Image (cartoon, rainbow, N blue to C red; front, side, top):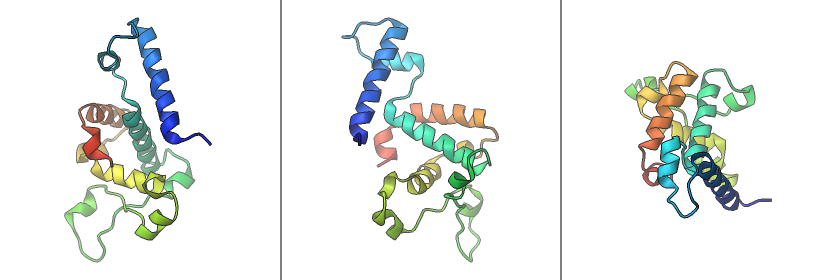
Length: 148
């Protein structure tokens, strides 16, 4: 089985190579301005982007049922809190996380990332507006603080 870090490194390399071909830059030139010019997300942010797109589709009935069933809306219990109407998702029980794939599993990663989004992005009314808002948000985000 291919190691995910190794695979991510290969994807990054291929993406940078494609960007250099599209923009016609030399290999020794910095790739960062090229990727920004093309408005391409770095690999780690692209993975987060794809995961959140799938989450949005699941919450809006546009994803397969088996994906939608993995997500549940946050319910604060017997009390009525402001967070109830914010469109947050319930995180899975802790023992489930440690026994299986941990924080990498969709059932944990999707609610964690979704709950960290600003309200205006979570409440987007179409897939296209969600993608646009999310991509802009991820470009302006320092990813090291956001997803650990």
